[in-house]
Image 1 (cartoon, rainbow, N blue to C red):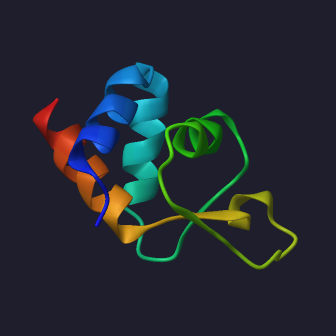
Image 2 (cartoon, one colour):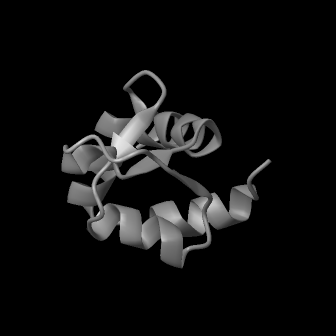
Image 3 (tube, rainbow, N blue to C red):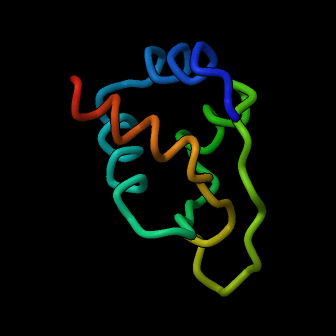
Length: 80
């Protein structure tokens, strides 16, 4: 279980563009592959869990947004 306060603090600090990108990733079926970019860096700096994915030759498949984070993002993005 991911601390809800940690998730909320992370979400509050995201720019509108990163929120939109997070919502698009969260809407995908699992596994939710992400590139190493500003959104992924913000998750790691916030202490949110991620999972390494096997390199497939596609940069979108380096890090996975886990279900707990995706569930929070889906709720937060519809409340905004």
